[in-house]
Image 1 (spheres, protein in one colour):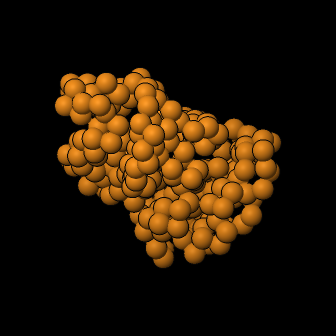
Image 2: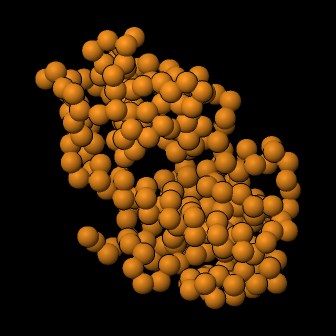
Length: 248
Ligand code: CA
């Protein structure tokens, strides 16, 4: 396993220090967060604005997670988070804001944030959320490594996630990137019931909970590709009121 940073600018593996970036312009808040996170054993850098955060994020060591305040003097936190995601950087982001309207939560999730905390918050809760974001990141990286290691096979289908070659009953078929991403997520979570909301968040990277029809349309497409009888699915199963599960 390589120790070099990945192409996405994330650290290779969190052996040794776990590095966090705190982006917050209010000096005393930033210093307090840095101190408390360091007491938890993290290595912490502080950026006082989005421009400085951008510069730090270019550093070769990268960060394992970012605590990002929404109110910054240059770009706001939503814009910064969106830029990271647009650039293909999926480092976990926990957003901090003084505002608490549901709109802002949706906006934060749509910008690609992983979690959201409203100021003033309990320090213990923030620390728990940082730990949780780091754990999720490890699971996802583990899952995507696992999926990359082998060609996925079920029934008479074979999917190579590296080359994007897909065959069903020996015949090559063409999947879109999004269809492949959904399959990869199901492959990493076999037989677990996955909600439409989770798929929207994890595959689409959207926290827009209303457009669940989008998920249903994609599930229909996957069934047409892979099921012997798409109206009687054996692999991509609807679980009433809950979501979908993949049965290899
Ligand atoms: Ca601020």
